[in-house]
Amino acid sequence: MPDLSFPQFISAYNTLYKETDQLYHKIASYFHLPDAAFWILYVLLEDEGGVSQRQLVSGLAMSKQTISSAMKGLEARGCIRLSNGRGRQKLIHLTDRGRELAEGTVRLARQMEERAFLGLTQEQCEGLLACNRSWLDLLRRESEVIFQTSQEE
Image (cartoon, rainbow, N blue to C red; front, side, top):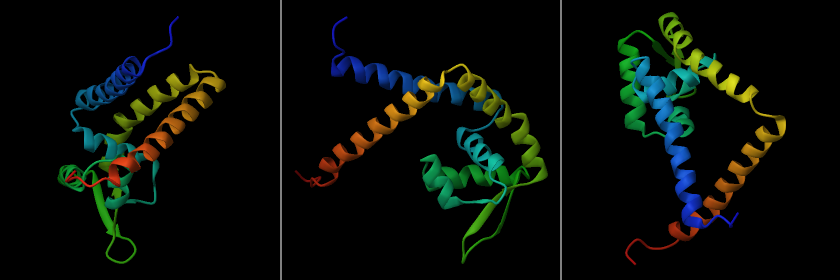
């Protein structure tokens, strides 16, 4: 088998990434949830202490506007509530209604993920994480070339 060329690799990698994203979009849509609301519920279901909007923006790699809009929708449905955190920071928590919604949606997705995880060997799990970590580290290093170059050039 010939070595994989960069165009072949990046095409296959990007296809896998997009197909994974499309699968989660399909799951969120199946539950009649916007993607951002699904991911907020996903995070909140596992975090009893509450999460700040800043943590959601950072952890979900979504814009503040997208998170804020999804939060407003979840708040209007009575699924989340805000509490005081440190300083002016507000923490986001699931309400009973939100926990019920998350249990009937996100929990099913988490169970799907766990079953898929159990289909992998320990070596495959460790290899998948290590390979993705290495790829991200290399991309971050290479991105510095872009970030250090003036956009006017």
